[in-house]
Length: 231
Image 1 (cartoon, helix red, strand yellow):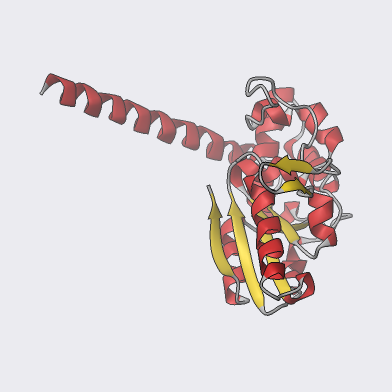
Image 2: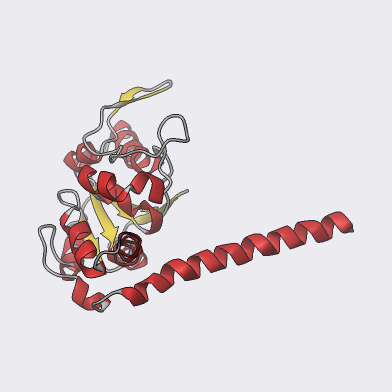
């Protein structure tokens, strides 16, 4: 009985810690100097108001959306590649596949370039580590990256730019960009609106900002995409 009580107590403490952490992060949104709708300016990568039109580009016989909420090693980018390769093996070419990757919550740094990774220490902030599993990376490990060697398969191109060349569409959650840029701004004593603008301007080429990741999940399914959670 004592063991059970101790276990329940630990679970309660863990749950309360998660709630407190989430509340603290979400509460950071109140420090924004501009409301959310006003932060979605038209920048180099486009406007969130273009997101509905962007989803109209999802074409193909076989369509799927990969929902990425956490850094999960190679999986956020290996799975879209596997989808394309195995469809090719069963007679469906890349041009006949519609693949959407949604980068939201703690996965948003993958949508941004190396300069922002270095400046804001995304590896440390979002717990993205190198091969030793301990050292935070200082650049986007999946942008213009070399092919990875997969046991039993060989070299596989899972770099974001390689996936885009194969027709994979990637988008980033603007709500998460809003919250986390505000957190970063508070930590560095900068203007949250200025940091948000910098992050949007630093999105990788052809990555579309969307109002929120959950909004994008809904739109992708409305456009015929099957859902795959990357966990």
